[in-house]
Image (spheres, rainbow, N blue to C red):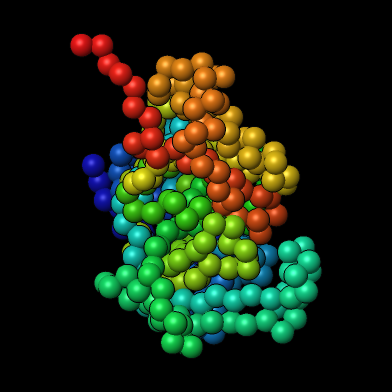
Length: 307
């Protein structure tokens, strides 16, 4: 299999999803892409924006791609193996300085704070400008493909084909499965988060550049209708919807299907077991649509075998 190095340059950067974008590279199933990326806000260093930048075409997250995968026809499944995520040396986060429904409820639309972080990928720690330290858990917030409709589409809401998923479980060692919406897939990635909590409640994680990412893209025979993932700790199914209850239902429905397929149990049986061993997490509540992921730990279910 081939390793494709994608340079960080104007040609490979974009700030929206569209099936009309020309691919920056065409690869075979099973090939690996390696790349660096700006932070989500197109910063090359704290306070300095990348130039040139189109205010309309580059209004969203700074993304690398799109990557065309040969034989990735619409309706198939793309497996994204997260092989490596190395954050850059700096990052930032903030809260309470803009109007969102949650900020309005909290009375925090003005007078916000911004924290600047020094990141050490080798030790896996970060220190903010007030001296507080956190362990890092880096992942890519955006992994996905464009909607099938022509035209420009925002990078903000996640969709069934991926995108701004912002799920903190998708760390190194994860395999993410996405429905392919368009021929070639046209996969893009970016938005490195050095650390994030479930919910991403302020609308920001530790936003940081990506020093190096490595993703292996391959076609899978697994049929999925919403993103699912094998993380180092668990199987995960993800649901997205404007209504949090609906997002939870989508995630649970996918989990019951997964449990039935893997453990040969009926739907009601799977629901009974899920109530014992599956955890619901709020992925994020800030990306226009809500996200919920259901987690089934790999060691949660053990069934007797006939000898």
